[in-house]
Length: 97
Image 1 (cartoon, helix red, strand yellow):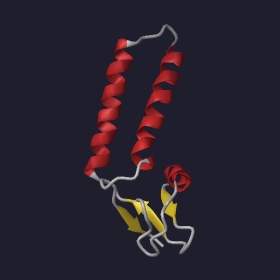
Image 2 (cartoon, one colour):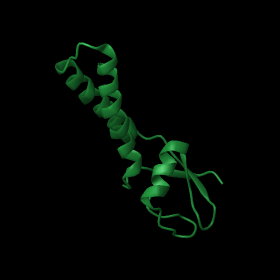
Image 3 (spheres, rainbow, N blue to C red):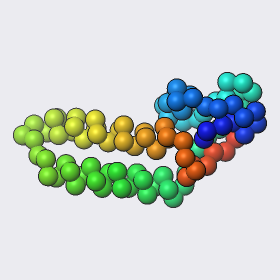
Image 4 (cartoon, rainbow, N blue to C red):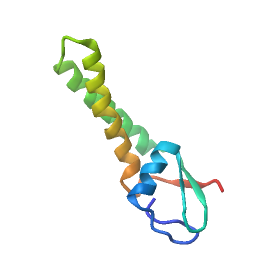
């Protein structure tokens, strides 16, 4: 979401980053809160990211299983958060307050 629907406040990168951690985005001007609606696009993105990371994981095997899991998490979590951080038209939001 680039702008607030109510007051047209332009959300900053910091606002979107906070929204990925809290699950909702809040407008600083009018105090409106929005929650992301689940969509087929977010499901497809998540599936593709997990599929690609699992394929890469099977190719790169480390001796230590904790190291395997750490590399998997370090690559997967930021990549999944990119879908919420980058404003685009594939996300739909629902006003909750």
